[in-house]
Length: 206
Ligand code: GDP
Ligand code: MG
Image (cartoon, rainbow, N blue to C red; front, side, top):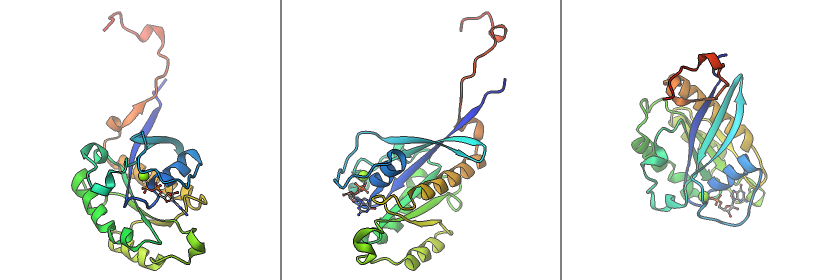
């Protein structure tokens, strides 16, 4: 019986502190939202399994532990990423203006083999706030930025109201998988153990 392979995709989420990165991940993976601000979480990443077409994939989504305030995320955070999710807060201009820094920092640190085709996605979060009245970055402006950065996909989201979160991460997974398939699949997939027939085991214990 052939070994079924499950693909592991590493996704990292970047953006200024407070834009809702942790909340988006929590909403996507645990279907939970907390109003409380927690700058740090214990885990480096959370995982979610999903199916894309006929492929079982495990999304490994890496969150910062608040160090984004110092822009010192360390090389392990970026290493081997298959997709980079950039997040800003539509009610906070500065978080939009720093997107260029995050984008460039990612390319510098992750150093992907083909920077011009590496998949990024932009999320404009907190669209629920004040019924949209306190918004300072328009959808048009965000889409223009995406167009100037190689037609990056753009989603407007609310982690609080679970608006567009699944759809956005579905897109993330698709992009990551496409990028992964361009690379060496064999070394990047996790074999799922299948029972071996007795006779195929050799006599050697090592
Ligand atoms: P991070 O620093 O980027 O990880 O941001 P957090 O996920 O910790 O969120 C910062 C604050 O914004 C918290 O108080 C969240 O409850 C709040 N928040 C996050 N997403 C949303 C959202 O979509 N709508 C609203 N109204 N608040 C949000
Ligand atoms: Mg956070």
